[in-house]
Image 1 (cartoon, one colour):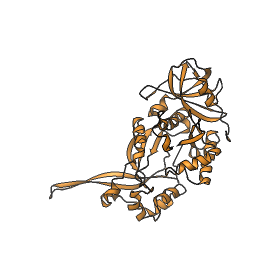
Image 2: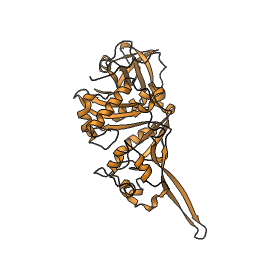
Image 3: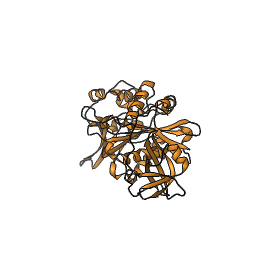
Image 4: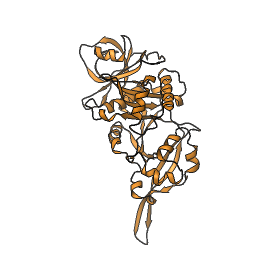
Length: 361
């Protein structure tokens, strides 16, 4: 059985190992940064963070049979605000035509731009190689649980959600786009610049040109990366597009990967997630999907069958045990049909569980 739960301090060694599988600033590779991230997440899950810009929720996927942490995902309540901008390249197309020659061309430009209006962001989806392609579709579970969490706590998140998808990197984790473009203005490697930007974005705004840049001036191997994702990210791209996310001509200034956008309330999983009161163990099943509980054990979620009756829900005994839930607890529910589409359930009357600080298992 696999369970998704909030990250805890005891996960540190396994998370450090997992972070080295893929470059992602959402899962730092040094112990101090990772410890600070887990602390921020613990405080957010416990309801101790009052400002949206400080809320960061980190989920881990645990293989209960082996006790191993084999995946992560995250959601951020607000990623930008005045004085702390979100940076991106705005992609534009320009048509040029010569009457004398009777010919024209379409040129693509990129220009550094900022956003201080603070959307929420999903990110940090990492799955250990040995668990990719698993019959239980663990990657989609890691992704879906974030949207259920947003649907259960909409007041914690903004009305606009973005997702940054990593661009194509070389086998040694370099960005060809950065090597041919960014490094001409900022003498840092791709990883150095991307990592430093998590502490400060001032160097990008001061050193990078503010004018439009014609990507036709770049070699083909660099310009073809603008707005493209790496092969390993294609499944995530297709999954997000299925959920209603779309590109808005915004790309990452470091690796050229696209930013996808969606209205929070238009995401099917967000809309179809609800809470109902746990009435005990089930004898049958009316639905299957993602179930969760935010209680004394912190946040925990898994795939399970469940039986709904009005404002009450019953779960298999093993699911109740894995969630650490007791009768009367509010249970988050997202039902899916056989095609993998979220379907609506009647809104329950369960009240959100009281949030308590979680220090460990």
